[in-house]
Amino acid sequence: MRLRVDRVKDVNAQKLLKEFENIGFKEGESIDDFGMRITNLVTNLKTLEETVDDTRVVKKFLHVVPPRFTQVVVSIEMFYDLKVMTVEELVGHLRAVEE
Image (cartoon, rainbow, N blue to C red):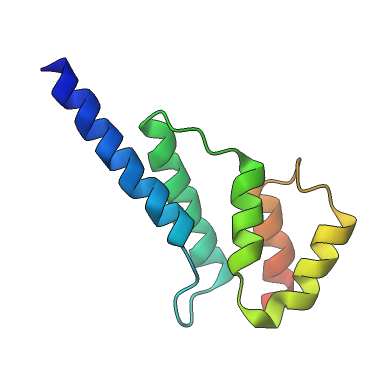
């Protein structure tokens, strides 16, 4: 029985990891909404004992933002240490430009 539970957990984790790799902004989606969506996905992965560090999430977020944020992304990558930046901080920087 335990083997089945572990197998289901592994399958669900793989599904969520694939979703994380393929995540992108939906048409008209706000920075806040995307931030919540990616944070919820990472929380679900951690529940399944998959580790996804903040740096990976921040880099993924920066990689998929809409083109209108390109200048801001370049500035963030140049002037901030992405290794210590949280998703919440990133959302704050991008939200300032979105408004």
